Length: 483
Image 1 (cartoon, rainbow, N blue to C red):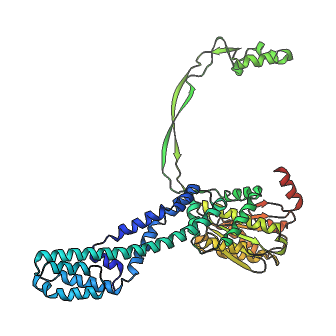
Image 2 (cartoon, rainbow, N blue to C red):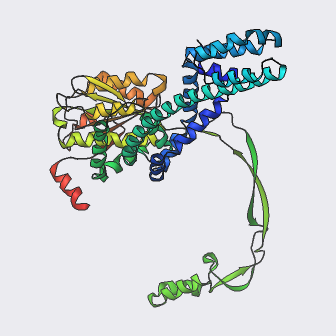
Image 3 (cartoon, one colour):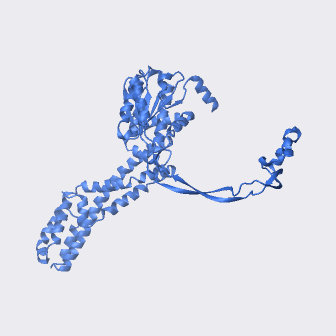
């Protein structure tokens, strides 16, 4: 079976031009134009998908089989092209019968040509084949157009769905063009409007907690780019102009007005001992009007010195990914749960903007994992936000899982963030030792986001940074009063 793409090649039809026309028509759709005007960042992200659409439409043409009657007609046309005049004349009745049998649009025109010219001539053969080819081109182009129009409608529906979701999530997750591009990639999943409204809900909650959002931004910037000096750096000489006395001044050569304290006359020094004249002394000092000795040889010359200077090159390393551990125990329910989920959304926003990965671990009696920056990140985020917080607090199991994750090459620069009230049992010594090894030998950083003022100091002591966001009623009222 021949595909539509194969018929295009046989008849010399430019399928690339057909595909370009469909893509231009898609991007010019009125509903997209209105959306792009409102969200220009997402327009740039969407245009990156154009090559993928082009390849998809081309593949669709290659995979779609042409109708059997059209294939028969094209094969007959190819056979007639190769025939000499006498053979073409002998085959003509069979060709007309086939055209009628497959109900070709060229049938009537072919019969008229043969009826008007009883004898087959080279001119008739050329005219017959040319008009037949035009008829086939019209038929194949019509099929291509119908197929591509159907694909355009489906693609437009998919784009509209993704744009609707991206438009809703843009205020929550998009900080720059890089974040807009990654959000567009994450929106490829099949999600209903009710699903991603959960992200919008926690985004609105985060807007009403500016202190929590500011805390996430500070934590995201806490790891500065590391600069590692290279060994065996080259050296070079450095020339500097300095001034030094040409001769040592020894002989008094008169008096002058200046601010040279070391060469003051004794009467000037005496005024410092008189309280009424002290401010006058300082005034004259500022104006360089104190009487001082002028010494012979008080001249200066330029001297050039050289010293070795070592230039060091620095390799800047990007900030690493986030491994966010969220305590889902019963004590973290209610307002704590809302704050923890909103804080994770704030970290995801930073991760998308800085092209970092964001991995979530929920811990209570067991550890549940979600990667929010993967291809299905939006689906993973919705599943995470749908989780309910209940159970116990097992920070030790979570830290063991974090240590295991950090052993992989992709997470060797990761920072761990533990969100909890830290009301839990003390950590085992082996977990403390493992954490300190990661901090000391592998340069991993462990951050604690403490949501209670009653967290155990023994647990918090292992963290590099402690970010406090007390969710107690008194602290909540104080934050609202300050706003």
